[in-house]
Image (cartoon, rainbow, N blue to C red; front, side, top):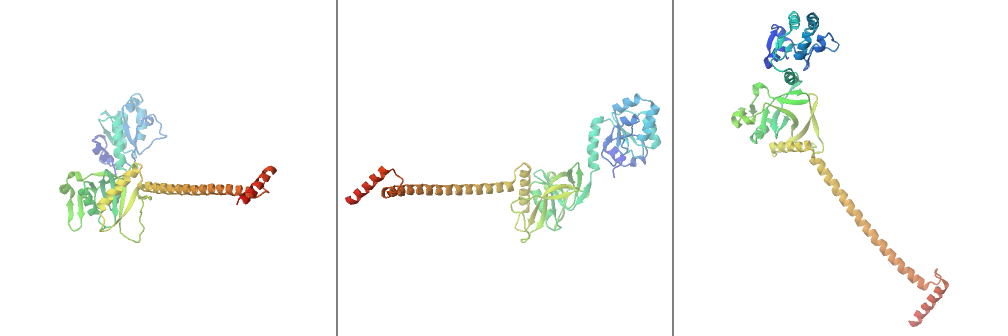
Amino acid sequence: MLTSLDLANHFGFRLLNGDLESLKRRITVAELDRPGVELLGIFQFHEKDRIMIIGHKEMALIKDSDPNFVYLNALKICSNECPCIIVTHGDSCPEPIMRAARETNCPIFSSDADTSRLSADMYVYLAEALAPKTAVHAGLMEIYGIGVLILGESGIGKSEISLDLIKKGHRLIADDRVDIRDVRGKLIGTCPESIYGMMEVRGIGIIDVARMFGINSLSKSAKISFVVNLVSFNRNEPMERVGMKTDRYEILGEFVPMVKLPVSAARSMSDIIEAAVTNFKLKDFGYDTGYEFQRRLVELQEKKQMEKREAEMLVFHGQDESSASKGDKESIQVGLINPESNYPEEEKKRMIVDEKFMKEGK
């Protein structure tokens, strides 16, 4: 639960109005409001549960308006649903606003920051502080700059694999438990404060990662972009062989790419996880090895089919030429001995005479 007191302590605001009870007002939405329209008496689109910020524009509006009119409108602004009012640029709170806040016990804070810059910083802080949260039994590593969530049943070796990855130069965020927040569509993983920098290794106990491997082996948070699910090796269970299929793991309504890796004694899981992360980065940059392999097979098949068609065409063409040549010879022989062919009459007589002459010569 986020309160006005938490907000004031984080940004170092000065309290202008309100008691301890008023500082317990809850902040439920990551939204801010500039109440210029409300100060003019227009409450059609007023959001009661937003933090109100009064800057130079609101100050000029209040200065040019009737104080009693501003006071009556400020009573509606300073309702019980309003978490707090913040006056920027180090200005003092206008008297009509202060009078209404005292009557409703609404907290008013003062900040020396610029209105725009303070609003931007508060949006980021509120989005993180009010983000949906969950916790998972897993490990979180930063491998090649990618936040990798390592899942697996208890005793499968998540901590030992994480320890091997740390020795390779990668960074640990959390071991055994990961706190996850959905910040504007990005899953941010952190470690509970009580176990930050610690790791449990079966047979040894709790170790201090920073003291053993240096402070650079740790990181406070990481965006979860990839999930590795460790499963026990089973020969009878079908596993992905080419890499065409991409599984997804759901966290707080967001879906993260996941790969399932079988664990066995003969496999170096840290090397395999590094290869999986590298392959994921290649896919993210537009190169998919599985599809490239499929494309290569298709090209080879098309090439073989083309060569086969060309060979068949050469064979058929040779047969056609041979048939044509044989047909010409037969037609010539038939013409020599067949006086009933379609030659002119004089040509037939000449061919018969030639035939008799050839027989007499023999």
